[in-house]
Image 1 (tube, helix red, strand yellow):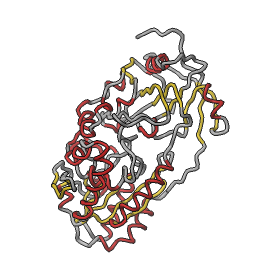
Image 2 (tube, helix red, strand yellow):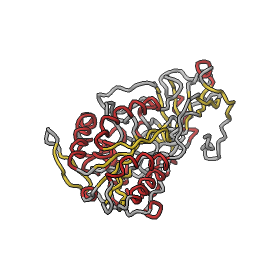
Image 3 (cartoon, one colour):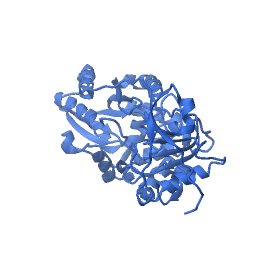
Image 4 (tube, helix red, strand yellow):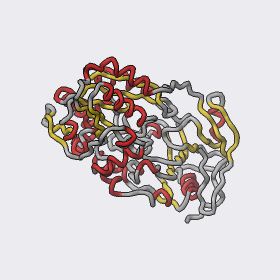
Length: 418
């Protein structure tokens, strides 16, 4: 360990951002009520595929189960089909494991699962790019998509992360995901929506269950979209989702410390829309301007997939030992953005990681002037811990809850602060 001298860790204060948030308390009732408007589309005796993805969506298992129940009420036969591209190590078994981590199992859903990485080529874009679609989904009489609509972590456009992306990349499995991602931002912003239109034209997509989440990562809105309204309404809902996106309260930081990162937090583990760092060549970073990012741990729900780890500058030895390179690299290479899989500097513990970051900010940082914030992750940002130097500019905009004392264990790791 490098000896930097006196500690630069500043006086810290817990704050709470003042947000007005909408929260939907009963997702089952909302799903049932809205799906009833289109119940005639679910024919008795038909086989209905329900697409379930890998995102960490609040009460996702309850929402998917509500869809299953609505299908059964119509005397149709529901099937759960994993719709997560290359996630789960790009294996059928791995994708079942991801869903199980969210409480979505055959037992809990009361419906059989059809998990396979095999796809059919159902058409081609104007440029001749193949459109892949899950082989099991192709055999269904009807398909219902279930996904959150939110800003994408790789690009910005009228259609980003939502129902249409789940059709193309989720149900496209590894082949479909790779086909789009190999073409970079152009593939995501142009070819993905075009491919989704082909899917909606050729496959029996019945409707999409669109989910919006608030700044606290809880359900703000659920809207059932009939297939003919999916594209137009998704554009509108994306604008609402962007307005609900949480944010850090400062535009400039020396150091951001994240207690954890992971696939259940963001598709890239650390959400670039929150930290302003994209690691995509020819794509400029945005605010906030954060000089060093430290990540202390990887969530269990990530199943050792650390895609996006390259967004951090430093990680801990504990986190490093949790990383499985196989699923991390499969997901990273499928995305095409290799920089996000580059390994950061590995510190021996939390304390060394934070001290190193404060000492390597390309300016003279002291314990008195350090602009540092600590957050649980890039989703849960209402309650933060900030350095004393930030308090003057935050006054009146946040609730200052009191001073924080970090307690270190014998190995140099700190007890959870959130």
